[in-house]
Image (cartoon, rainbow, N blue to C red; front, side):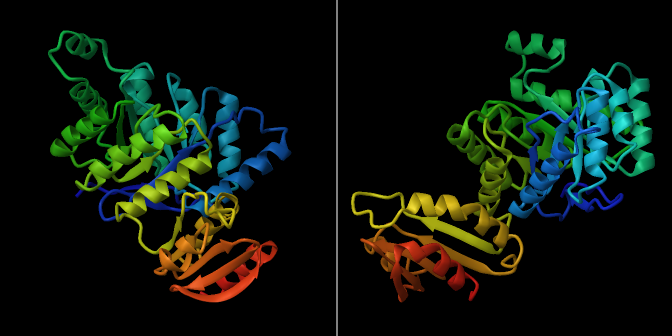
Length: 367
């Protein structure tokens, strides 16, 4: 079992734990700049609204890039107004980390190897220790030390072992400073490299591991890569927090991550949504209905249905409706201009298609 690391707890920020017996947490990363918030209340309000929506979808942690002082101050402003644990992603300039630590950030992402000196790292570590803030080490396949790159080029070391060795070197700095509140992340855009480097590390150390396939690609390809890597590692008991990295919205990253965790048995309860792919028998706009309801159902799943196991079926016709969807607690299917609502395979209502959303919501509220 890995050690337990704590994030958050200052101000209104929710305190969560990573590692040990904690549930596998779900992360995403903010995709836009936050360097102009001091005089832009409208943008700040919009960010807070989106963070709240992501929290409802099941997101546990959000990481923000902090490339300059203005962004650091912007992150502090955001952190003062949300309960979501926020992570400051810092490269090269340790002073940005110190600025973020003036606010309610829950964790700092730094690599000792790229912020200048041991003394700079020590300043950040002591500030984190004083404020009860965790640190994440983030190693990517494109940022390995030169000596390891040379060994890989000569065939003396695999890239996966190079990733693991880099993480070990970075972690040694924190161990020397007697700081154990850190999470390790080793990512490659290659699925097998990601799997292997995390296996190597988990065999030797018990720090919590953040899983991710970096630069995984667009929606479909990225979900495929992440699903293979995460399911392999999680089923081996490796991994304490995940992020699905997509060239898509943070919301899609969260939805993908939630589904992966659920299918791997790492999230219990809530709503399971099943829907047919559609065919020439189409009698109901499955795609449109799912698009309208997916996020709503996920939000409900993480709140009022968190302690239940509910299956919702959205089917395109009566063939796939009460038949293939008979196990569903609530289902909807189409037949020409009519829609049927069924529960456990039994039709409970037949309505006009224009009333589908309204009646479905009414029946949902009865579960």
